[in-house]
Amino acid sequence: MVIRQYAVIGLGRFGTSIARRLHEAGQEVLGIDVNEERVEAAELYVTHAVVADTTEEKAISSIGIRNFDCVIVAIGNDMQASILTVMLLKDLGVKKIIAKALDKRHGQVLDKIGTDLIIYPERDMGERVANQLLSPNMLNYIELSKEYNIEEIMIPSKMAEKNLRELDIRAKYNVSAIAVVREGDIIISPSPDQIIHKGDFLVIIGNREDIAKFSSIE
Ligand code: ADP
Image 1 (cartoon, rainbow, N blue to C red):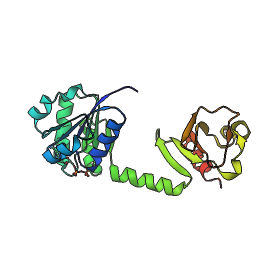
Image 2: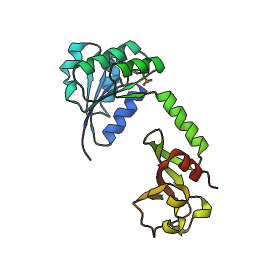
Image 3: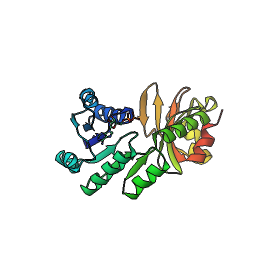
Image 4: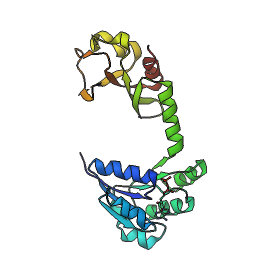
């Protein structure tokens, strides 16, 4: 895996979970927070952690932030600090900035000042939960675009014990199986002869509506 350098600004619940996961995946992570206690606690799950107020130009430029591949602004409730931080990061020429927005207006400002990706944690999580309720067979999904997803769907029982050629899901449902998940193991690019057993999950790629039809088969 390519090792990239990430900086996470704001080590609350949101920033912490991003930092922790990236670090677990072997990435280099710098954690930054104005609060000393949060920085101390972060030392267990990041590569480095520093105390800094990122709304201060001197503090942020002395960290060498522009050399990072991606900076995540996870400042929670202080909208002004979040916007100021993003502005400074832009001025310093940071390549990729991801920021958390509290609401639509905050998101619009972040967009105007050039944030590359804006996350609305509550809204996005709400949609995810609703999607899971709508497709109970679905474990996990990745949104590729507004139209296309990759989703993990349990094989409907009436389709089990057949191979992929017989199932012919591409012709019948307009979706393609890119992997099979069986008892925690993953079979990538399964061959047409691959038999799908009861309890297996198919990782499928396709249009959202086609996937929804496939996942609603009893
Ligand atoms: P969450 O909802 O993710 O738990 P919090 O509001 O608890 O959000 O966390 C945001 C973090 O951002 C806090 O730890 C806070 O100290 C930090 N923070 C706020 N302003 C700044 C700033 N100007 N510079 C650096 N860190 C900041």
